[in-house]
Image (cartoon, rainbow, N blue to C red; front, side, top):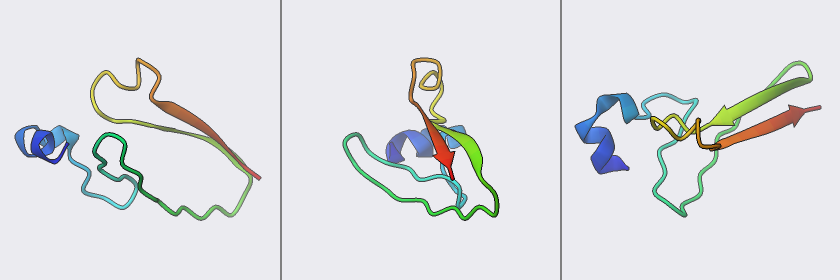
Amino acid sequence: MKKMAKMDKAMGHSHSNSVLLEPKQKGEIIWKFDNAVDIEVACNVPGHYQVGMIAKVDIN
């Protein structure tokens, strides 16, 4: 992934709301919410959202 991000800057993850992971790797992002909300997290690699790399999260 890092090699791909160097070739295509659109695939880079350069801000605190995303993390770049190799296959089978784990990572962590901590978000704090003031209210209950339903959110969706997804892969931003082109085509991955469309094939289901999505997680729905219920923040209570």
